[in-house]
Length: 603
Image (cartoon, rainbow, N blue to C red; front, side, top):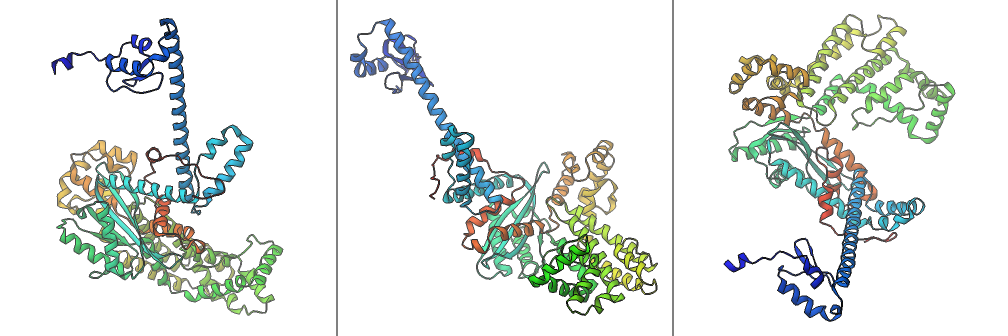
């Protein structure tokens, strides 16, 4: 052992000329055949030279040998650069295929779009940069390749989400269920997790295809799989937001009841907050107006105009002849949140033109010209516009539940104001009502009736959002902790809350960054407040993300793509819905080998 340690095994420069060897990456390399010698010992190097190359180079003197060595070293460097360039081009081609596959998935296009895109690229290349044709040809975009790349990208996103999940201190789930083009029930589950730094991650957790029934038990089993597969502890689950369906909200056999039972089995100390989607509830509140008879009449008129091609063409021509500001009337679609308001507004604006057109078709327009109907149409048009404005406020990604609650509270306050103004005969915030009131007698306009409608609507809002009102104190701890009454706060955070409210530096920071960003600046010396903030930040107020995902699903799995597999659909939607995460294409490309696809063939 002592002899081996003392032995000098460093490569000597003189061996280059004597044995035609050089030193590359800590290994002696033969300049003639490129063989590596494992141990840098003169005996090993000399033996290789004498047995393999001595006879060929024995007649060279030292000057010739030195010259030969330099030539061989230049040749070796050239070969290495060539291999590096080939590797770099190969890796670039693989990265390009991943990038194109991601764009195809985001745009909901079929996998064979890759082949079409490659044809276009090759034609452009022939004109713009023909010397790069081989590099473009190396990008594999066949149907099977794009499908495989899509699955790889989705798996990478899921792995990133799983890694982020290890740092979550609180998380909530939002879920909804809908059917695709092949009548398969699809359950979407979104997660919003908050880590110890109070950074929010909002991503698709699972998209499960349910080919049988969709009872509460079966939905719970799928949700439980989603939570278990990502290795999240149940005691960190804070909130559950659903669409309000019985299978979701049932206290015993529904999803909510089974999740609570599961948390009891896991000995979870925390309380589960269950929310009915705030946007769904807002839409349900509108039904309390009980003005379906007006909407039915409007829908019948629109359907008469739009149902037959001839009527539709003649109506558009009629509007053009009249010099109307509008060119058409839209269809009413019940499932679209903003459809009703748009149809009512357009019909109100075109009420005179519609009546004239219907009369040319021999239809009775007496009902449409009645003052009572026009007043009701104007009121429904205005209140629908206000409800649509609220709906738009409640939509969007990353909405904090306190923001949504504040929007609803503001609308309830507006309803009280509108009710009082309507009782006084002053519909100043109802432009359509003002327009009709100016055309008819003030005594005829039913202000008291509409004030009653507003009162009923306000009562319905209070009833449906009672569960949010119960959480008011918790919401205020996040939205404005400096104005919360300490005595009404939970006892475990009262001491920390006093310290926070008396800290002028933190108050200045709150004024500077706002309520949404302020929780990140709560010091670690206030752990209870940070935990409370994390729980509130993690809560979903609506299932908007699920609804948005289902819209993407309808565009992706169309009647022409019914055979799209569950795995591919899930992968496409995970990529298209990703917001906080992005695929690590460098990592994926490093694991792949470039495969060139043909222009007109598929793998």
